[in-house]
Every structure is written in structure tokens, then in C-alpha cells.
Image 1 (cartoon, helix red, strand yellow):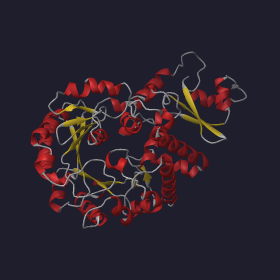
Image 2 (cartoon, helix red, strand yellow):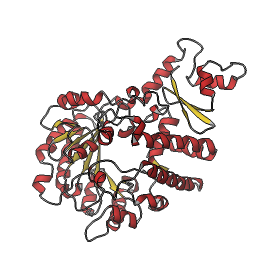
Image 3 (cartoon, helix red, strand yellow):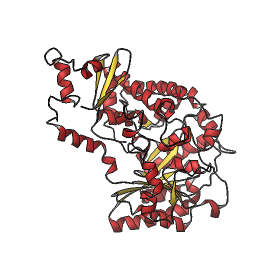
Image 4 (cartoon, one colour):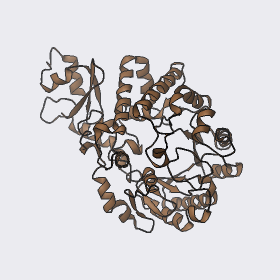
Length: 468
């Protein structure tokens, strides 16, 4: 039956089937399977594992083929309801001057750089045409809270429509929390709005990465997190970090910062190749350097778990859910077909519509490759038009050279936007793709850790069951 293999260490190799089941075998076993040299009597345990995990069949069509088909459908469930996340870039204004900022922020002219009521109305109208029964409305910037009156207008209107049509609605504000007030948070509490903030680590790292003129961004962020937790509740406030060149020297300190602040985990994100981040020497680094940083940080996270704390690393957790559970994860960057359009759409402040947030960042550099249209276009033109079809031709890793034969295909995804930004075309070229290099090595490392220590395997199994 269809499966792929990869050398994990010189002594071990992994085989993975079409639904992500895997077996770790001694080097050379893959070749023996392919050459049909596995003896049912002599290799009875291995033979049984291969049968049970859909690697081989004693009949031309396995009697359990329907079970395999059901499991495959389960892995692709994220496609069932189409677009769920709708990002409203409510303002491009921002009072920070982060050197790795991925968009061109502005500091003034509210009328020009805030999303108009007309565009908010049209964005909401398009959002509710999605067949998805549960929608997420996320407000981004710039600094979204600079246009809080417009956020209130959008939330009030969307809530009314959601009630009328019977759809679920999650609301999220992405903010640096520097200008948050009790009044703003009381409104968020009343309307059950989640807060997503940015925290790059301890004060030294955060203030260098996320500069705010005449103030400490770190101190304002910590104060904002504490106030938001007090009013909204601890679990209604999340934070994300971005790894810059400076961050690479502080893996343990960054993890400790998140742990000491009472977060349940951390997402170790490498910097994206868009906007200012691509042009600033302060931000650039090789993928190998990020992988070194990642492994040191993950070791620290595992130390906390050995001490009895449930503290996760979210990129690893996404991979582990794909590897150790029957389910998939609706994470845009690691889906196949890709999450752009299928999972997320972006309504920019100026009325333009983009396939992902990263697509919008490229447009700020005058690259409109992933612009789907404008809010004046109809739903079908945006989601099924010529541009969407062009993207759809390259958004499934099952049909991409280098991915189609990769053992980690089921755990990874396709990212046409990243391919275009780093390699000049949507299809991409896997041998020198940093997206591919990063994901393959992290997956390989997770497998190596599970094989080397049963305690780590149990920790990872618990992460795969964690819902946060």
C-alpha cells in the first residue's frame, strides 16, 4: 500500500502511510519491505504491525479500505466548511516602530489609513456568505486599538447578523496592549472578545525588537496583559513571539518569561520573509541558526514538563497532533490543500482582499500576486475566480515535486505565498526551501526525541491531546 520513508538517524528510519501513521524501524527495513522480504513467520511482530497500520495488505484491495478512507476524510475535515477566519485590517496606524514589522505602518491620517464603515459593511457581508457555521472575525493593524470605535461598530453589526442567521462568531483583537484601557477591556468582556498580544521575551529582547519611542514596550505589554487578565480572565489573553537575530541568543530566557507569566505554552516562531523583516539586517538569520535556537528552547520546555508542569511548544504540538492523533489542525501554514482561501481571507483597510495576511504584507511591497480582488467584487469572483484557481493549482503538497514523495508530507503543508516570496514562484523548489528545511528537521527531531526517551514520548502524547 502507499507509504513513504525517511532516515531519522543512521540507525533508524521511519515509514509513514497516507493518514500519518508511522513506524520507527531499524535502517534497511524499508528496503526489505519493498523487496517483499518480510517473512510472516520469522518477522511476525513486524508483519503484524505493517498489516495493522495499512502499510501492506494480504489482498489486492485491503478488507479495511473503508476504514482507511474514513480516517483520510477525518484528516481532511478542515476542508468541510471552507473559510472560517476573516481578518479585518482595521487600521494601518501604529505607535510602535518595530524593526521587524512586516507591514508599512503609518502614524497619522485616520481617514486615509483606517478601514471605512463602507468597507467594514462589505467585509461583514462577504464573511457571512461563507458556508462555515462558525466564523472568526480578527482585527489587526497597525495597532488595531487606534481604531477602536470602528471595531465596536463591526462587532455590534456582526453579532446582530450572527444571531439572525444562526452562525457562531468568535471575535479577536490583535494588539500590542500599549494603549489598552479598562473601558476597552470592559467592552471586550461584554462581547466576549479575545485578546492576542505580542511578547518577544524578557525586557532586553522585547524592547529591542518592539521599539516604542519614549517608553518601554515591554513594561506596557506586561501591564496590559495583567489588566486584560484581571478583567477578561486568564485564558482570554494570549501572546505570540517572533524570533529575531537578537532572540537567537536567549532561548532559555524567552521560554522562562512565558512560563513565569503563567502562559500554558509558547509558539517559537521564526521571522517571516516579508516587509521590513526581509530588508532589515537586524532581523535576518539562517534557518540553521533558528533550528539551534528552537532545540535549546524545546529542551528548556521539556525540563518544565519533567518537573510536572504542562507547558507546551505550539509548533511541535501542531506536528504531534498530526502524528499521534486521528485529527488534523486548522493551522493555515501547515495544511494541504493550503489554508489560504480555504481557511483564511484578509480584508485590507483600503478595500483590497488578499489570500492571507502574508499576501497583504507582500502587497505593501508592491507585489500584488496574491490579491484576490476588492470588497466591491462579489463572493464568487473573490473565492473562485481566476486568481484563486491559479493559487489552487499549487496548494496541495500531495502533487508538488519534492513533497509528493516526502515521508513527512502528512504532517506538513503547502505554502505558495512563502514559496513566491523566497523563491520567486508559487510552486517552489524543495531542495533549497527554508520552509521545507525547518519543518523537516523539527519533525525529524521530535521523532528522535520520542525514540530516545519514553518520558518525552509520554509528554508529547499529552501535548497531542491538549486543546489550547
